[in-house]
Length: 74
Image (tube, rainbow, N blue to C red; front, side):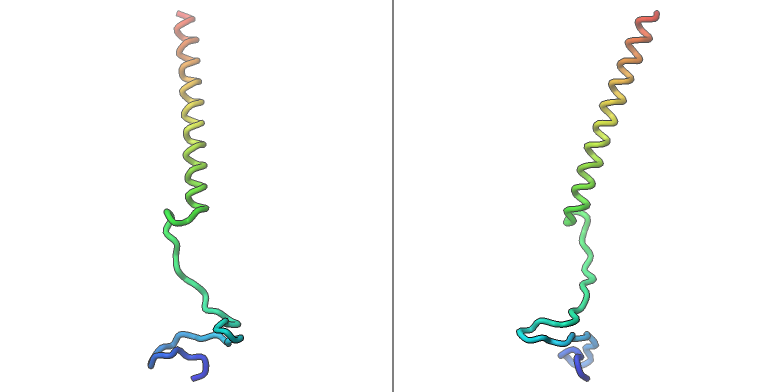
């Protein structure tokens, strides 16, 4: 059949070629990317880590401040 795969029984669609091996309708890539290979995921993970560290630092500062106030009242 026209635009069928090259091997017997291959049902892979072959797009119309425009010359030089380029396809007018290339097959979509369904390859998944692992999280540790995805730059956007790594950047978001880094931002989350920084945000968590800032939150923990602020919490510790507030806790220390509250402890000093309570010790000063006694």
